[in-house]
Image 1 (cartoon, rainbow, N blue to C red):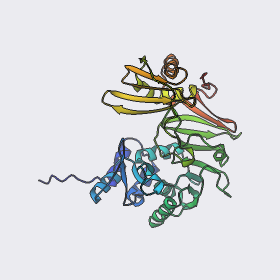
Image 2: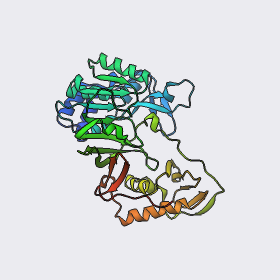
Image 3: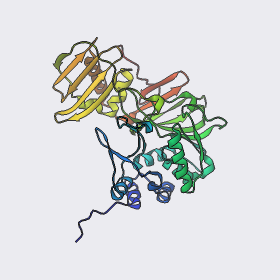
Image 4: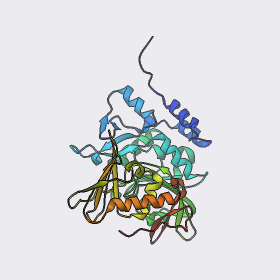
Length: 367
C-alpha cells in the first residue's frame, strides 16, 4: 500500500468551502470555474508565526495553493536582501468567499477592487459579472503586470489601473460595489465618493489596537456610510496605511500584579471597544510557553507589557495598563458584546465605532 500523501485538489477545496456554508448559489459556480492555481506564481512562501518559509517542490506548492491558507507572493515590496516580511499575498479562499458574499453583488452592477494583487478576486468578479463591469487598481507596477498576465491567460480582461487605490479612479463614475483586498487604517472618504448611494463597501480594517476586522458599509444618500463589523480579517496593509508595530518607550520599568489576563485583550469585541476608548494605543502580541504576551504603547512614551496574567511592567508617564483594565471593566459592564454588535460610521469629518446602534458612539476616554 502506498504511503505517499495525496495532494489536495482545487475541487476538493471548493467543496470544503461549500460544506462550511461559505459558497452559495452563483458563487459556488464561479469558484468552480476559476482555479486558484492560475493566479499564484511559482515562487511563493508560507506565512509562519515568526517568518515566511519558501515553498519548494511542485507537490508542496499545490498542497498550499489548494488549501484554505494564504499564499505569500511577495516579500519586502519586491526588494532584494530585505528582512523577509510578507508584502503581497493570495488571500485565504474562505476569506475571499466571505468578502464576496458580503458584497451582495447583483447582475449588471459595477465593482471597484482596491488592490489587484494576484488577480484572483478580479477573475472571480469577472466570471460573476463580466469583464466590463470589473475595475481593479494596484499600486505596485510589478504586481499589477503579473496580475494582468494571469488574468489574460485565464481569459479575463477587466479594467486595470496602476495607481494609488486611496484616490478615486479618474473618469470612472459612481460604482455599485467597492471591495478592498488590502487592510486599511481607515476608510478614505474620497473612496466613498466613488460609490453610489445604496452601494456597499466591504473592506478589512487594521487599527492600532486590533490587527484586523471586516466591515460592511452601506453608503447613504448624504454620502456617509455606516454598517456592522463582520468578524476578523487579516490582510496585508495598504502601503500608505502601514504603521510601525510600537511607539518608542520611555522611562524605567515598574512592576505590579496584573489584574487582567492579557489573552482577554485579543478578543475582537474587546479590541474594537478598547480601540475606540484608547485612541493611539498600539497593541501587539505573541504566543509564548507561558501564555499570551502583549505589548501596548502610546505616542507619549507610555507602555505596558504582560504575559500569562501574573505580572505587568509599565514604563513612561501615566499608568497605561490601568487604562486598559478600566476599558475591560467597562466592556464587561456592557455584557462583553461580540464583535458583530459593533459597527462603523464614516463621514467627511472622520469615522467612529459604535456599539449596537449607530447613534451609540464609543467616545474616547481621557489619556
